[in-house]
Length: 136
View (cartoon, helix red, strand yellow):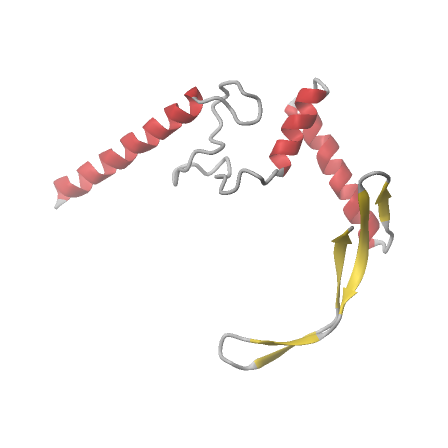
């Protein structure tokens, strides 16, 4: 039983190493160059890079990489720019302002009406009115 457990662990480690080297050798989906990231590689061992389930989804890290590449910036500089933009939009929405970006759209705060929902026990829960961000 111990040898079976050990061989299973060794197999899992070999599999993780193979997936890591495969990811490093593969061309990156964002830059078309080998970069070592695990974009598109399904692995239960990778925790630093999100596993892509849908190729049509653009993550914040994708935006940061795009800004860094297009404007010849470091990733840290691009991260500060993108995060600063999101923080500014969030701060203005919290203060009740509408953020309008010409040619792109607008972010605004809307009120969601109170409603009654069902809980998992079959009972009813009253959900109060709340404010939420909306993009148009």
